[in-house]
Length: 170
Image (tube, rainbow, N blue to C red):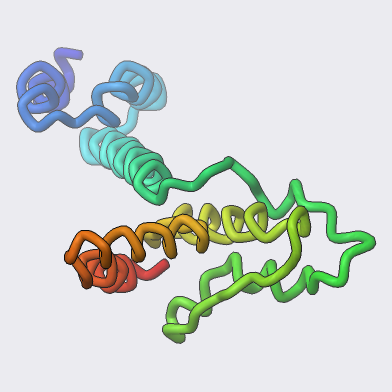
């Protein structure tokens, strides 16, 4: 480590101050690998920065999945399209999030047990993993909240929240 005093100094001083959890977690492995392969300080710092970016992205996705209040952890890969009238290609396209860029809505309609919640959650999770934000609402619960809001004389609060979520892109 004496050959790279800057890297050692970063580890002992800056990482705790700046709360660089990704760098801190990867530090020993990246430094050992870099020294073994005789990488320069810039290469080692570059690898540490990549680790920090990956950690921040993972933390952000985890946070966004929590704030989306998804009722389940479902994926498109877990849905059985065979024997249903559901357009698999369309659902996979929706999971790509292109409808968000076009400022379009997605409404899933069907009877009980047809997979609406599964598919909505899967689409939302895919979009969130792609860096978007969102919030899950069950229509019945949303209508009940709107009615309660009206009875309490506080109309518009939920609508304001929905507008803010709309700005969040999912």
